[in-house]
Length: 431
Image (tube, rainbow, N blue to C red; front, side, top):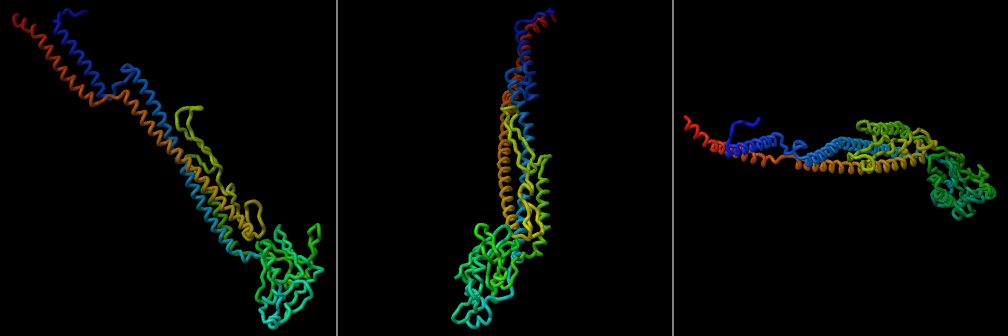
């Protein structure tokens, strides 16, 4: 119901002003208590919903930061695994190098007991037995060296025109000319790549295989068309001093002792890469990982997909070591076989190259993710700042407004009091 009390115009005007001030003070107190000048859609619909959209995206990106952080840790774990694997491969290289340094005891050797240059010939010619043997002509009638003639080994030209060297799958035929000396024969063998030859101080010819495969040396005639040799052991004995035609390499105890060490390192390599996972994901085990960089889906999604090939000794081409002189199949190798050891050394070098490439790829992916992590944090900060600018109150301004409203309220009360003084005068008359 309308008030039946009649107020003067001045009183009513001052009362309305006081009510307005009280309403503004209430709003000001709300701004100060909440820190917001736009607390709900009623305050400012445009700013409120814009700020809410910015905050929602900032929250979505903040949630993605956990996944980005997990991605970084997963890559770092894989990188540590690659470092460990590289260190183990280098240790394996050292073991193979030790095996290779003990090659001499494994090489097959052919050497008889008879000499090509005797002590008597040495005395007659004034040369060493080695020089006497080297100067003798290979093919012809056997004759001793003396002061005027170099001598002849006496190999029958009707039975021999070729010296054949065979090791593993390699066969080398060395033609012997009628004018060739033993020294020419030695030089020809040294050029074969299958074996090396020398004349020792006793005037004996020694032939040593360059690899650890059994070495076979035969002297005879080559059949045209087939390439087969008709060997003559008697004529071969004249050259080698009675040595048998085939010799196998020896066995190195040092190499045998290193077999378990190499295989244990191989096992440790596989175990190290298996342990390089983080939170259930192991990039070195062939696992895939997707790191999302924004909150969108489909073609608008920003993400990085990472999947490396599984890293293990088998995939790196590192086989197991076997205490054998026989060439092994695949990546496996016999430690008593020099050719196999060379292949093993090459495989380890290639394995290191693969690990370096993997490390480089992981490092590149890590750099991308870390860059996006920093970028995401900066975007979240921009979004939060933008939302705050749309809704937050300026506390300095609100404090100043509070004081101004307090003063205004005091003044309004004083003005209302003055407006009522006329009525108070009438009250005094009535008394």
